[in-house]
Image (tube, rainbow, N blue to C red; front, side, top):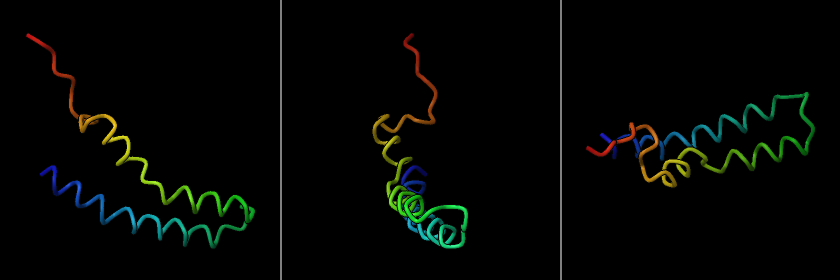
Length: 66
């Protein structure tokens, strides 16, 4: 199940980036600089980085010693 979730993230992130870029094109209230910043930041997959940095225990409860 864990591998399936990881594969899903791999496929959904590029889709999300394209959707962010399409949304930025039609946002008149943002300046050109703000659009460029958001477009670049959308490329960085924050959630996978946090998942890896937490050792894969992001959503698991803390295990207490007996």
